[in-house]
Image (cartoon, helix red, strand yellow):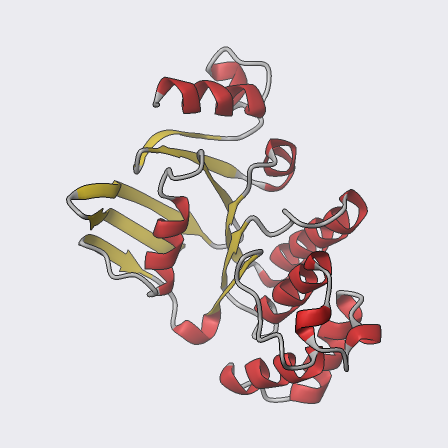
Length: 231
């Protein structure tokens, strides 16, 4: 069953199509990688799915907002509030029934208990990233949008986060749209990938099979080839 459907999505800025006729679907329990160089249209596509940016053309079919969530390294939570306060505010926004239990679980799951009363703005970038992902799972989303979710994390913490997200997908049958420039990560976690360049989808397939099908040794080499070919 399709959890997300994007149909002929277009976004134009100053006469330039930054997203140009993008169409794809995301099924229950699937992790879909959205790949491309900086400026390819990935974040604009995510922003339109979230309703932050209005499409110029096209259609987006998405679950109700209470079943959707988002995390990105650039989307920081209010820095003047404590970690616990931030989670509490969002637990109200998501109308979570047992808020204390949900907050306690989030703090423990993402190793944030010792920072619970610290102001968020004083956390390291990695700690803020962990908090953002903890926030994104508070409402047990059916659809999770992740924009570079492990970019600021050290390898050990990044691995813990990936494992936690994969466990969540398996247990909740959630769907994830995941962008990253770490091709090793994408190869490991994604069931399918879309390459986007100049606002268009130019390639699609299984990340473990697609490189060989295109005559490349791995996904990183294929990424570089697609990026250079579509300059």
